Image (tube, rainbow, N blue to C red; front, side, top):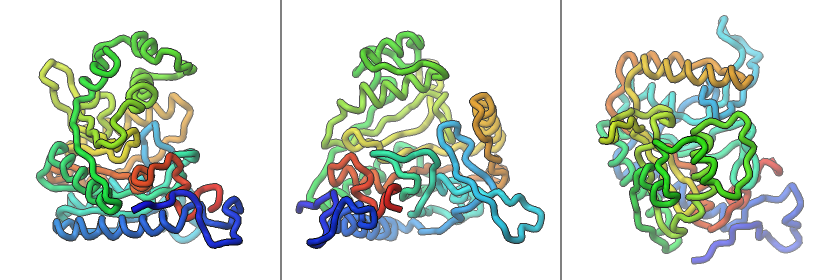
Length: 340
């Protein structure tokens, strides 16, 4: 079955006019099919669909993610008027887990400031879910099952390969990402010219991923990368990799060169989570960025006790792009940022 990615509308409509949709009817139909598949997939597995707030008192402190904020004009009973649009439903879902809701998922819109372009839109659709008692390795398998189920709608399939972050860099670039010097990382970029001002070690590693490694990924395969450097732990647990290096129990799933999902064996320690939020704030201050308030309600839930679990966020728009073979997010959105 073939689907058109770009605009194909009835005769007489100008696909370049900004009032017309940016996606084709085929792409919109495929999105509806994928949404239905997602809900049936989790219903069959007894994972509860929930809806959590889009506006919050807390923002995302991650230095690499910018949150939208707005001022509420109504009654707040002394609470701050500034509210933050969610960049993911993660914090609210974890509060539900701490309250005992069990396995759950949310399919909905999230918002990130400053992200607009070929592969990015300031508002996009995220699927996020949590499995109680699972680790990230088990969750990789389920995430791949869901992606393969979506691909089957188009009569396609893909095999899954799992590789350690360290082995990926060793095999693809001939260097060890945990021990190589910053100079060696920069040199491995070859003829890719990047302004080094303000870049950290993790920035160089990310540039090597996007410019040197991702282009060589199997275009028809699923690749799960595990055991990220501890500096890229975000909200994941840490463990020793066996050679004395701490690594994050985290994975990213790619289909071809498109990153689809990011998952963690979730951190349970409230004190450690607070410390990570505070470190994020310091980095933001040093960069001159806005420092959103940390989510103290998430921390309160962690203190009560988050059950051992694994969670993953999957970009639905990215999945649709991969399914349709397009590099333009506009091709899978009814109206992209330029037409909103």
